[in-house]
Image (cartoon, rainbow over all chains, first blue to last red):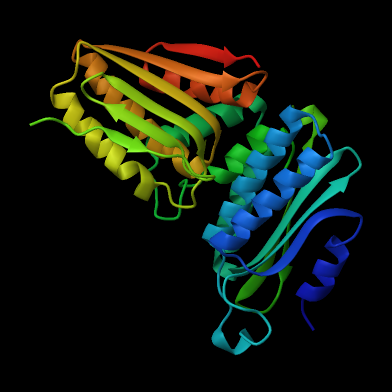
Length: 186
Length: 128
């Protein structure tokens, strides 16, 4: 038996959770998630700089998720609705953790892995240069930022992007990305 | 033919916009975080393309964003590229980039644009 999304979700959904969701990732869900998290950060009286960073990074994480989900074949539809994804925002020590998960087709893994590893290897200045290069030279796609999302997240958080590709079946993996935003990010 | 002004109210995910050819004022304020920003920005870029043909001697640009996503960042660059063309044609273009107190990310975003389009920005911190 391969990777089990429910077990994965249960594991994430512990500790100090601000928001957890699994299901279809729609514009409405994104709006709702942004409202809930923004409200809670205010309720916690969180420092305004950190609040803005978490919000910014959450926007990017959610829209990345929104634009890059691959749907499983129809015969999985009973278990996983279309545009299925997972989102958990939690407080871990002095950081906010934004965990997202989605199915992606196996052939895309190498590209994505190389991209994240590259981003993780860069210094702050190099990330700034990479951001500006992509901004100025790549055409915007219908999908959004044309590959700026992960660079922006790395730049704003100052932290490495943590990821795991869980093997689901021959054609699909479940891609889990954990992003940490902390006081020191600001 | 007069270029009609654009006046758009802000929403939780899109900014308020005021483009006025008679006054030479270009303003974008608020949040710009839509999933698909091309739809929102296309008419603005088209408007500037028209304005570029017959701009005022001086155009004042006020950008005051609270949040913007990477999807918007390319569209905002498109806006600036039109302004750069107006500037290159020997018209004065004043760009005021507003950012909230201590918002270093927003200041840095302004500096990124400034270094790409080569018109000096006035960086203005909004102190509460």
